[in-house]
Amino acid sequence: MGMTYDELGIFGLYRKVYRCGPVSMFIKLLDTWKSQVVPKEIAVKVKRFFYYYGINRHKLTTLTPSYHAENYSPDDNRFDLRQFLYNNTWSRQFQRIDDILKSFDVENIE
Image (tube, rainbow, N blue to C red; front, side, top):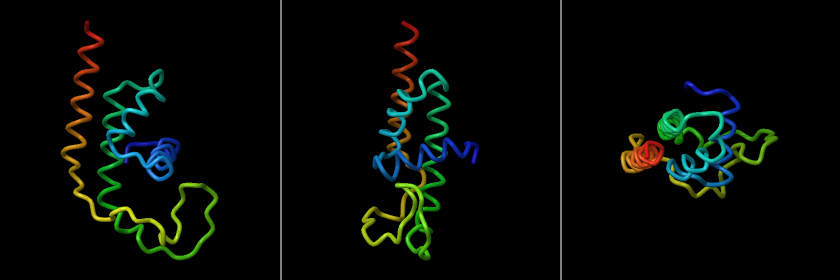
């Protein structure tokens, strides 16, 4: 997928616990990873995560009982009322991320 397990853990935490979508996750990661990763790479990773999340979300709706050691690990989904079929292009959200990136580039040039 082009991401480390640590990054996937952060993405999972932001998605499940903090209920972040693509744009809010991108904005939070800009602040969190500002000294480690360039904004364009953050955008690519967020887009890649949500692409794969969108095409695989339906698989999380039925799970066998198991032990979960993390707050954001999948449960039996009785109380998970999020939609499970997504448009995996995320066109509106990804365009907003691109707009934020463009404005970020303009601020750094001036």
